[in-house]
Image (cartoon, rainbow over all chains, first blue to last red; front, side, top):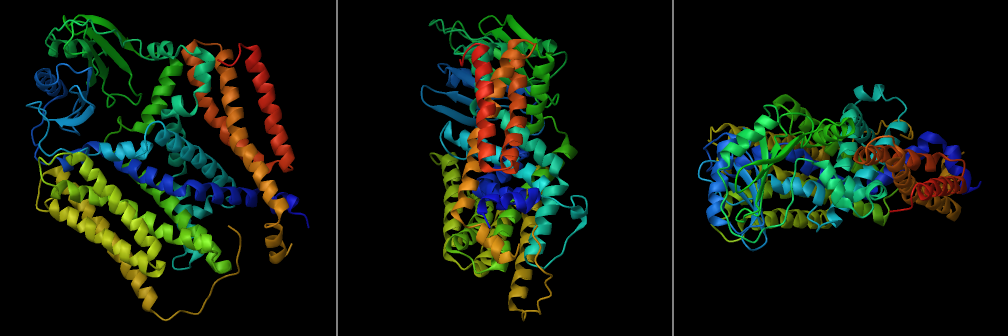
Length: 504
Length: 102
C-alpha cells in the first residue's frame, strides 16, 4: 500500500474534504475575527451613533460639511489635508481625518457646530479597520487579511466539491448528536448563504487588489503607478502647495456645483488638500449610498476661488464593473432590508467558521483520544470563539465607563477590547473545555446585559433602543445555550445510538 | 481498504511528501499562475490600459482557486507541480515577449 497514491484512491471528494479542513484550520481564527468585525461594520454608522449618544442633532450632508470645514479652518488651517465623510441620514456626525502639525487624527465632528464630539471614540471605525487590518501595521495586516481571504476562497470551493448532497443538506439538522450536529450546523450556515459567502470573499479580495495582486498593475504601468491613480479618478486633482497662505472660498457653492456635476447625486466625501494654502484643492466625491458602484464620481475645485477644475462620472464599462464589485463588498448602497441581509449573511459565515473549527475537534475526538495539538486547538476554540465577541462587547462597555475628556480615550477603548479578548483566550487555554464553554459564554451574556444597561437601557432614541435590544437578545440566546450545556452535563449519559461513522 | 490501513496510508512519509508537493503547487504555484496570467491579460486585452489592468486583476482571483483545486486533483504530486511550473513558464515567456516584467 503506497501512501503516494492514497489520495487518488480516496477520491475527489475526500481530497477536497481534506483540503477544506486544513485550509479552514490554518487561518480559521483570523477569518473568524475578520467575519465578525466585517459583520459589525455593516452597521458602522449606527454603532457610531450608539457610541456617541450626546450627539442628537442632525444636519443634511452639505450643511454638516460646511460646519466641519468652518471649525477646521479655525483649528487646523495648517493641515496637509482634511478628509471628511458627510453624514448620510444613518451616521449623524462628519467623520474627519486631519493633522494639526502632528499625526493624523480621526474625529467625529458635530453636524451643527463642526467641533469634535465630547465623547471621543473610534466608534464603528474600530471594527471596520479590524476587519481588514487586524490591528497589524501597514501593509502586513492587509496582506494577512488578503492571505486569509484567498484561503477562504479555496475553502469555499473545496467545501462545495466535498459535498455529496448539497440540496438535502439545507434541510438536515440532527441536534444533540455530537459530530453530526456540528456538521449539520456547519453545512446549514455554510451552504444556505453560499452565494453570499462567495460574493463577499471574491469582492473582499478585490478591495485589497493593489496589495495582493499588484502584478497586472506593474505589467500595465511599470513604475508609473501615479498615472494609474490619475486614470482611476480623472476628476481628482493633485498639485503641490504654493507656500503662500490663503483662505478657502465658501464651500457650500462648491458642494452644490458638485451635485450638479453628478447629475443630482449627493455629496459623500470631501477632501481638502492644503486648506490654508493659495493652491488648495477641494475634491468632492459622490455619496456611496447613491448607487451600488463605489466612488462613482468626483469633482475638484480651486480652493481659493471655488472655480471648478475637473469633474468625472464613471462610464467606462470595465471600471463600472470594478466599482460595482467593490460597492457590493462595502454595502454602503444597501437600504435597510438589504443591510440586514448582509448582517445575516455575515453572521452565518461567522457561524460556519466557528462550527467548522469545533467540528475539526468533534470529528477527531470521536475516532480516538485527542493528540496534544488538537487538545490545544480545542481550548483555543473556546478562547477565540467566546473571547473575540467578549472583546467587542467590552469595547462598548468601555465607551460608557471611561471618563469623558480623558486623554487618549479612543485608544483606551481599543486597548480594553484587545486586552479583554487576550485574557479570554488565555482563560480558554487554562480552563477545561467542559467548564470553559459555559463559563465564557455566561460571561459574554453578562457583558451583553451590562452593555445594554449602560446604554442606558431606558433610552428611547431609536438607534440606542435597537442596539440595547440586540445586546439583550444576544444575552438571552447565550443563556439558553449555557442552560442546555449545563443540563446535558448533569444528566446521566444516554445510551449511544450513534450510527456507523461515515466520512463527511 | 480497511480503516486501519487507510490511517496508516495517511501517516507515512510518502503521504506527507505528496501533500507537501501538492500544497506547494496549490499555493505558491497557483498564485504564480494567477499573477502571470493577469500580467499577460493586462497587456493583451483589447481595451484601454486601465481597463485591461482592472479586468485582468478581477480575473486573476478566478484563476488562483482553480489551480489550487486542480493541484489536489492531479494524477500525482509531480504532475501537479510539473503542470504548474510548465504553465507558469509558458505564461512567463509570453509576458516577457509582450514587454518584459515591469
